[in-house]
Amino acid sequence: MSNGEILYQQYKPLLFSIAYRMIGSVTEAEDIVQETYLTFLQLDQQAITDKKAYLCKMAANLCLDTLKSARKKRETYVGPWLPEPLITKAAATPEDKVIEQESLSVSYLFLMEKLSPAERAVFIFREVFAFNYREIASMVDKTEANCRKIFTRAKGKIDRHQTPSHLSYEKNQQVIGDFLHAFKNGDTEKVLSLVSEDVILYSDGGGVVKAALKPIETRDRVLAFLTGIAAKAPKGLQTLPQSINGQPGIIHAIGTKIYNAVSFTVYEQRIKQIFIILNPEKLNHLSCFAPIS
Image 1: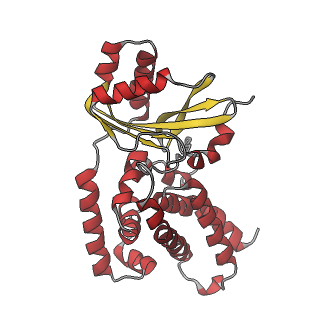
Image 2 (image 1 turned 45 degrees about the vertical axis):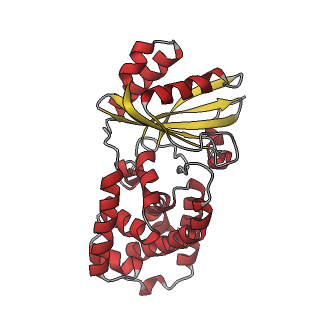
Image 3 (image 1 turned 90 degrees about the vertical axis):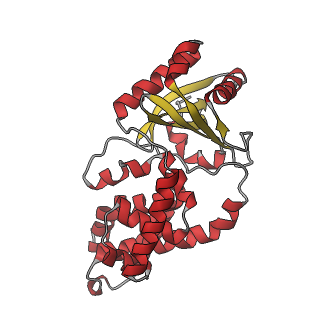
């Protein structure tokens, strides 16, 4: 194995976690990591003193190009735009742990859409990966002072819109499991106790499949919407518990086809947000998690 291949294996989890957080797409993040690696192999690696920073800069530049080209498409996107769901598992190595943090949640990535591409890059490098401003300035080709201003502006936007959450996987799993069981069995009193009064539901069909075009707010409206969906559920629909973006969630499948992926935000033992991803283009990479026919 060449030195370049060793470095690639060492930093692949980091590069993927940067790319995925920046663009919210599993498939595009994987493509960016691959392109970063192939380009890096063609360079004089001996002339690069800080290879980690250089790889991160290459990946970030590709992400910025992707975000700029995707901006118009996202501005005209039909309904709420949600990130592609990422199926996660227990981290096996220290490097893998970078994709098991709060900043991986669907709720957190959804907020990234409020940031410009430059704000997103600076914020992620500083807030998530704790790079210093000198390193960030080098990676995004800006001054340290400018990076500090960009970070402050970006953090202010996130803090103003962020929904409080608890990230205890086991406790959240219990709340979500109890909710699904109570909802399925028509235990209205239990359902109401597990859902916040100001809950918000987002569904992303991308104009490809039917979904709510605007967020659904308040407990009564959200539960009415979910009841309507359940009544029209396709025959043979299976509910499969999965770890989605570092938190307990579910995917629904019909045969070997993924129908949707559902993620939750839980706070004070109640569900605060529900994210339903229905756009088939955002579910293709989950086909390996469908039941075997």
